[in-house]
Structures are given as C-alpha cells and as structure tokens.
Image 1: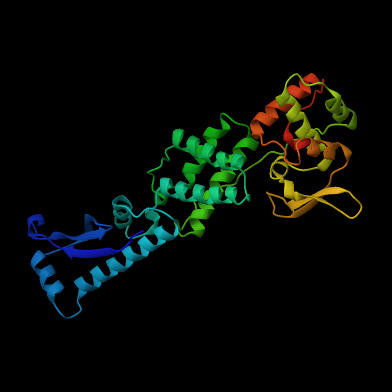
Image 2 (image 1 turned 45 degrees about the horizontal axis):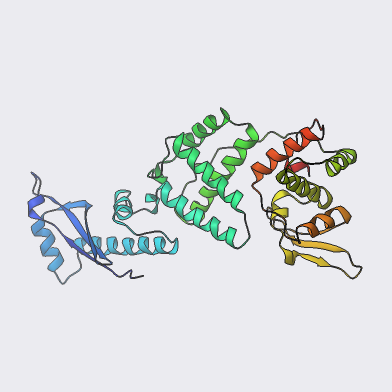
Length: 332
C-alpha cells in the first residue's frame, strides 16, 4: 500500500480577519488525494511568505517543521495499529492539539476487535467470547452517550458509572460485571497502545456478587446419563454435559479440544493435554469410560455449540430429569 505523503503550508490574504491575520493552512497529499485544513495558528500572510522564503531558521519554519513531524508520527501510529489515515482522523488530531487522544471509539473498537479475531483464528480465544465484545459495544452505543464518533479524550468516569447504572437495571450484577470487564480490557488495550493517557475506568470498582453454585450429586448425573432425550440436539447437549462432568473441563476448554489433543499413555489410558483458555495454565485430564465413550461417538471432535443455546438446553434436560437445581455449564 502506497503511504507516501507530501505536506505544504500557505497563508491566504483572502482569509484575513479585521486585524489582518489569516490562519496558517496545511495541504496534505497522500495516495493521490489532497486534503486542506486550517491549523490553530494565525499570522499576517505577508509575514508568512517572507518567513517561508527566508534561508534562515525562524519561528514560522520551526512551527511548520514541528507540525510535519507530529503528523508523520501520527500516521505511523495508525499504520502500526492497522487503522486508516483519513482526512477526518487528521482533522481530529489537529483539533485536539496534535494529540493521539483524537482517536474515536469507532477506531478503538475496530482495532481491538481485529486483534480479538486474530486470537480466535489462532485458537487463543473463541467466537462466543468475541461476540460478547460486540454485544457490549452495541449496548454501549444504544444506551449511553458514547457512540462510534465519540472522542476517547472526552470520556470520563461518569460515563462508565452511567453505563453501569443502565446495565444493572436490566441484568444481574454478575452479568454486568462480566460486560464491564470486557469494556475495561478494551480501554487497557487503548492505554497500552498510547491511544489514551488516562483510563476512564480509573477509580471505578467492578463489583461481582458471588453466587452459591449447587453442584449435582452422582445420582443426578446418572439420571441424566440414562434419560432418553426427545431430540437429537438435546442428546448432543447431554453428551457434552456428561463429558464435562467426567473431565472437569470448562465449557470453553471443552469446545477448544481438537482431535490432535487426545493422546494415549504407556498404560493405554486416553487423556487430553492443553492450556486453559482463561489462564493459559496447562492441564491434563484422563478420559475414563463415560467420557471416552462420548469422545469416540463424535470421532474425537466434539460438536461446536453456542454457550447460551447450550445452557438453555441444559435447563430443558434438568426439567426432563426432574432436577430442581439451576442447570448450566459451570456445574459440569
């Protein structure tokens, strides 16, 4: 991609005010497209022409050289972040005093989600996790004063507190904590990449109430194993749940398993060895009879399902089996 850029400066008499001053203007040409913008500096057009033509260094030349250096630095930062260098981004950069804080929420989300998708493709994350970031973005844009064109520099703690208040009006505190954690991680990404100097989450504490998890008894698990499911989909959800019960794997770690992750030791036992998606810590789980039977049924490639659909299916299975406990992937 051609990123060659040329910059020139001028000061027109036609734009003089009553005091005889006119704004210094910049003309930027990149990829054959030319943009013209006014800079936050005014001078007399005659003085500007005299200074620019002078062979000696002077304040006008110092100013234009400094502006050129900052714009080139800004362009480089955008290229490194895989962000487009546009007239609007340059205008915002100049408007905010040649500060990288001219980034908008739209730019930040675009860069952050691109990075998250790379993690998904590298199997360091999952599509369900990626979609959670999209859900938070959509809620943020729809139910707050923050939108895609909102400047990061304009965000404050109050914006986060207002969004938190809205979320708590429709979700439980645990769900809200998870959503805010997603948003916070994005702002930490922005801070690490020099898009913001101050994090709007500074001073905000994400509270999460601990829920008492009611685990199943062995008798209840056996009841689920033996029950006849009315549909193939519920049977698939039951298989995945039983596999979780006998391997102690989380939903995400189970979904990340691939045929090559199954191994056999010298004693003939089949086991899986991998790193946990959440912590990166390596785990090893032996597949005993029930779990091994399920792995073989699906030829060591377990079905990929959406977590919400999976949890909804488990609730139905709980009703079928007469289990009066909350059924979800975390009790597997």
